[in-house]
Image 1 (cartoon, one colour):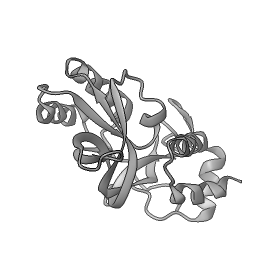
Image 2 (cartoon, rainbow, N blue to C red):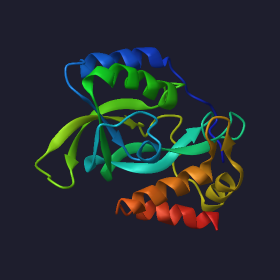
Image 3 (cartoon, rainbow, N blue to C red):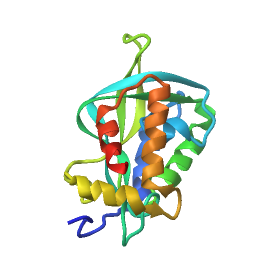
Image 4 (cartoon, rainbow, N blue to C red):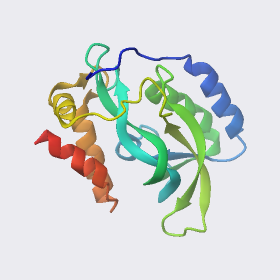
Length: 199
């Protein structure tokens, strides 16, 4: 089956309240960017560093019914899934702007509350002894929004025609992410392989 049998949504407000509480507002806010937040953060960044998180990997494996697809024809977006390692960027937001940026992030990433926001330890690539605790948007493997394993034909169909009302085509999003990663010197072989289905 190409699309999931049911959608999932939950109230994002309690998740935002929890993120605000655990951040606390006493220090700068750090965000781990692994896909479009790298190339279109939509908020002012005071500092950024190449970084990695262990125990998680980037995957184009979450159904999108708003940003990159529709309820009838879901597209795909990236999520952090358990296992492996992910290279990306950590973005620093000054403490006084942290609350506003969290609200912005929730409006963008959490309209239906599908992601599971978590604070993850991120190691700087330039100095692996340096680390920060950064907010990241993860997805449990048992979430109904997790695609599971898709066939080559399914990826081809999604890349061919899945477009969302907010941000456009799944294919454009995947390509832009790959190009941004490559510009940073980050190799994502899994994404390179997926995009072969778009040819």
